[in-house]
Image (tube, rainbow, N blue to C red; front, side, top):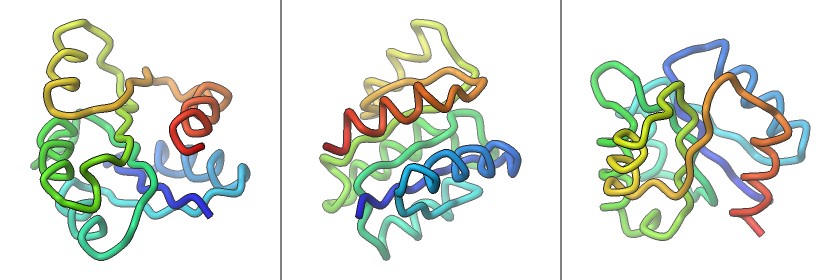
Amino acid sequence: MTHILTVDDSQSIQTMINFVLLNQGYEVSTANSGEEALQLARDSKFDMVITDINMPDMDGYELTEKLRALENLQHVPVIALTTENDNTSKLKGKRAGLTGWLVKPLQPEKLCQIVKHFTR
């Protein structure tokens, strides 16, 4: 079963993402911060990570860089789900190691397409 880590400091966004993914049959683990996500990433195997960019303490760029430093996540897709949509942010994300970019508000169909594409 495909195991996805979702990272967002907004409980309502987490609830929506998890609802969509669980209904598609994915196994989902959630983190409310970058630090929590790193701990989970060290302790579990994930097939994909979906992260917010704008979070307190550690943003999604820094989280992605730290995830990429972990041997078990070097080649795992990391997707940003964020309100940011400018080219500068996307370039910064690409440099950090992001695989893809989804713009909020959450569009369940688009999220499912991206997950299916990267977890085949």
